Figure 1 (cartoon, rainbow, N blue to C red):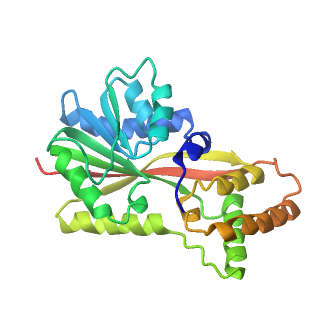
Figure 2: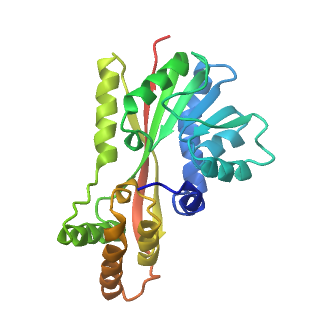
Length: 265
């Protein structure tokens, strides 16, 4: 399918946010080691999206560059940083072909990025190319608790699609993270992972369904159009039978993980 980022940009920003205190902890975990190593550091975020990770860094006054292939995502972020974005550049560009000189940045950030790229190796090499000696690569991702109602709804959808003859493939993100780690270790680098924030999100069954309908998860993108709507209609019927109160929130425990890798000086 062809992704319509114009349609999903605001929906993504509305549903994939972090609470303010979580955003602050993520920003601190990124900027602190860089600030200790470099004077007046410059940050680059690949696939910056609507700025849920970048905006808190911008708000602290650092020089920041964000790139994304979606002008709609960048436009949402521009609205967010209006008035505080004096040291910010937002550029429509591909992470696999960055328009920057070698060694231009002291930190490169990529959050939920690698699994979106079949040729992720190019983006990884580009990240290393634009990093200064001793610079940091920060990878970040959200991890939900294994058992929650949102997951249960997704699993039911997978079952419905299976009955229609389509296998919904999940887990690509975690598999890709393992591949990237292996690639970095083969280069002699030493990635370090750390959970930097934990929180509880209250999400209703209706919101879980809306997220699927908007195709905000990458695992939804491969579902053919001819199966997408009928399968969701069947899922809606199951959800209404299973959750009489569609707007009753259920807790989802989350944590945010950062993997930090430093280049040799």
